[in-house]
Amino acid sequence: MMTFLTRYGALTVFTVMFLEQAGLPIPAVPVLLAAGALIGSGQLNWFVVLGLAVAGSLGGDWIWYELGRRRGAKILGMICKISMEPDTCVRRTENTFVRYGVRTLLAAKFLPGFNRVAPPLAGIFNIPLQRFILFDGLGALAYSAVFVILGRVFHAQVENLLLHLAKLGKWAGLVIGSLLAAYILFKYMERQWMIRQLRIARITPEELRTRIDGKEKPVIIDLRSELDLTALPYLIPGAIHMLPEKIDARHQEIPRDRDVVVYCSCPNEVTSARVAMKLRRRGITRIRPLLGGINSWRYLEYTLEPVSPSAD
Image (cartoon, rainbow, N blue to C red; front, side, top):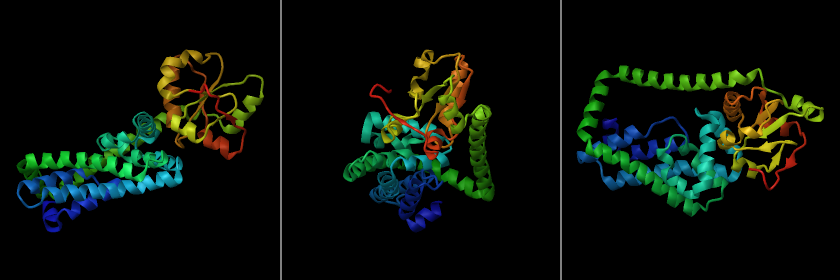
């Protein structure tokens, strides 16, 4: 890495930052640390490294910003499918963005999950491009500067570490790759286990429609975020909107003697699964996530009703 950085200079920093922010699984932190170490030995320039790091980061984020502005909430569904922390990170970032607005971009790169979701959210919220560039650029500068400074301060240690890794050769790559693969496998199995726990209990849109038209109507709970509700201000008939964050405070409103159907908007139904497991611990055992969430209901062109002003 040091040889590559020395040969191609800070252009390597620009390329890696751009590719990481564009969505490729390429970690920029080791490159920033190595660049800081080379600054410490006088082989790279502070301003060139930080300037190109910010430019690369802005380039990748701008792609996601435009996707969010042009495609709206659909882009969040795509992120939901490819993320290792499916709609948990998406929802957390949505709520933070609703609360703090464009200032979220200042810290997004330091928070796991936020980095991927914050730029498209800025586009969805129609943040002016100039403000997006300003705040996202400041966030990228802070992020890059932290690791470049660490590399500069500990440049001797960084160089020794890279030297030892170079001596290990392909074994170092094998160890690091194995740890990364083990982490991805663990997160995948954790997610599959959670969904599998409730798979048998899921209810299809056709079944739910029949139950709504029947005598014993189920309790229906809409778990979508405020952003999703704003994008599609409609509920399945009879549904009550509850934010997952308020379930602990409002679970007493849910009857224990009737079937409870919960649904969200993320295609992998992780929010529904998490809330269902939480409600089961609260003594609500007759709970069934809606297969496919509200999108499967809309796909079949079933009736929706407008959100009442009191929905929260």
